[in-house]
Length: 472
Image (cartoon, rainbow, N blue to C red; front, side):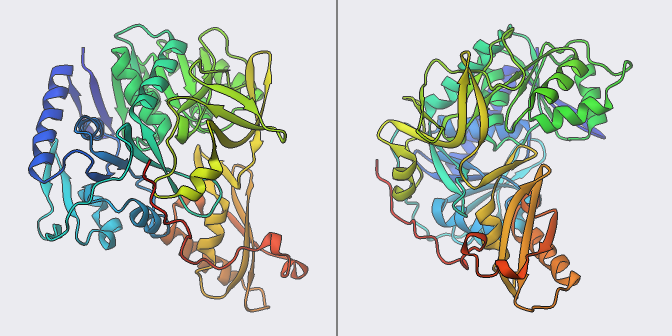
C-alpha cells in the first residue's frame, strides 16, 4: 500500500511507500544539514502541494527547526510583514516561485526544489556573512503559522508540536477511519486545516494520502473514483462546486464521509452536499491558533452546526457572545508581538474573534467579531485590503466589506470627478501586491457625505507598531 500518491493532469503519477517516504525525509535531512539548517533555525517554506512539501515540513520538524510554511499566493504587501517579523535565515522554495520572493532573499541561504525530490543551493542567490540567529521561542514551538485578526497585517501564531498531534487525533476519532483508507488532499498545504487534516491525519491513521495538484472539478471527480477515495478534507465552496458536476455516471462509490471546514456551511448547503455525494458531511470549526476546535463524530453531524468541542479544550462565551477557548495545546502567542499576544490570550483563555453559541451540545457559528471574512475558505483581513489600497496614488479613503462570498469596496479618490479608469487601475495595482482572493470584486464610489466619516476610512499605512520580541 502506498503512503503517498501525487497526481496532476497530463503528468505521470508519483507513488511512494512508507519506507520510500522515510528514505526521502532522510535524504532531505542530510541536504538541509549540509546547508547549515539545524535546531531552532528559522526556515521559510515556499512549496506547492507535493510529496516533497510533506517530506520537507516533517523533516524540519524532526530536526527541531522552526518552520513557517508561507502561502504561495502572498505578494509584496503580505510578504513585507512576514519577512520583517519572521526574518528567516533559510528559504526553501519552488524554482518557479523565486521571482515572487526575489526581493527578500538577500543575505539568506536559499535552497531550490528540483524535479525528482532534490534540493540544491541557489548558487548566486546564496549570500554568506549572515550569522543565523535562530528563533527565540519556547522549546515546544514547532512552527510559525501566519494568520489574521483584522489588524491590517498577518500575525505569526507560534504552534506547539502537541497541537498537531491533538488536532489529528480528534479528527481521527471523529472519522473512525480504518487503516488503509484513502484520503484526498486538495487544499493548499500551508493552511492549518490542510496541515492537520490532510498531512498528520493520514500519517497517524495509516492512510494513503492522495495529493491532487489541481482544483479542476472534472479531474478531481475522476481522481476520487479512480483512486477509490474514502475521505476528503476541503472547504464548503469546493464541495458545492463539485456537487454541480456530479452525475449518475461519475458519482463516487467509495466515499464514506467529507470533512468540511474553513468557512461557513449553511444548513441548506449541508443538505445539498450530503445529498449530492450520498455520504456524511462532518463540518467543523478550527483556528490557526488551535487547529480543530470542534467537529461532529461520525453519525452525529447536524445541518447548520460546527460539531461538538474537542475533548482537550475548555470553552466559554464572553458577555458579548465571543467564543473563548482554553487548552494545553493552544498557541503560545504571536511571534515577536507581545501586544497582540496579550490581547488574544487573557490568562488561560484565547479569544477566537468569532461569535458562537451552543445548541444541544453542538456549537453554532454566528459571525466574525474581528474585521475579517472568508473567501473560498481563505481568511481576508479587511483592514489589510484598506491599507494596501491607500498605497495607490490618488486614493483618499477606502472601506472594504464582505459581499456575496467575496470582498467589495467603496472608494474615494483625491480627484472629485468619478473616473471608471481609476477603479480599474486600482484593482490591477492590488492584484500585484496582495493575494488575488483579497482584491475587491467590485469597487464603487463612496457617497460624498461619507468622506469625513472616520468609521469608513483607514489611516494611511505606516510601520506596524508591534516589534516587541516574545521570549516565553
